[in-house]
Amino acid sequence: MYKKVERQAMYVWVYSMKWKKKLQRYGTIYYSSPKMKYVMLYVNSNRASEVRKELINKKYVKRVTMAHRKELDDHYVLKEKKTDELGD
Image (cartoon, rainbow, N blue to C red; front, top):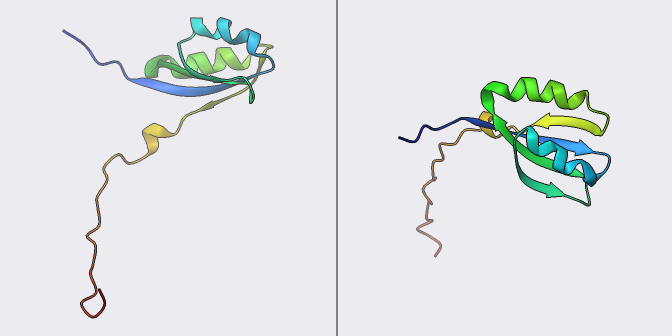
């Protein structure tokens, strides 16, 4: 049976996009921006801090930031639209 694995997104800024292929060994590349020179990488949540430390020490990496999607509240509530009886 399928077991859900929690994943964490991280943004890795690099000096050159030629290093994109090296980043594949750390996780799944979801998106890359050649113009801004960053790669969006998904890694397992339990290894996220280890991978971040490893990437920071690489010469071709400018900086690494973690995505804040898990911190957002994913329960949305629609507000009822109030109608003005005097107007429309």
